[in-house]
Length: 68
Image (tube, rainbow, N blue to C red; front, side, top):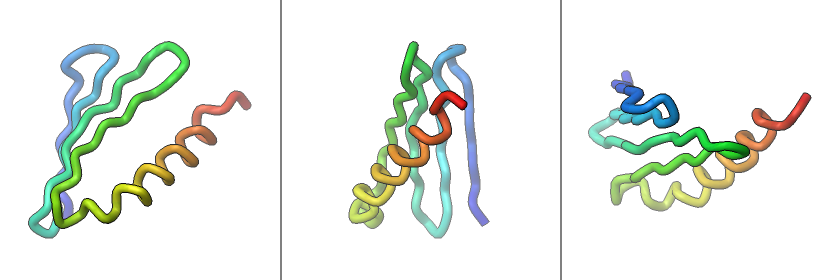
């Protein structure tokens, strides 16, 4: 079971931490005019997933934020 913690230190920034199987991914999401910035820190054991996570976030994020 994953443990997820989120917070909104400002109206434009969400902090997050996701822990599962002894690993924790932490980061933030900034909401800016015209874009959303996601910054995640992957632990060493998960570093090889970085290109997969980055590609998925870019692809799915653009689709989610595209005008309908």
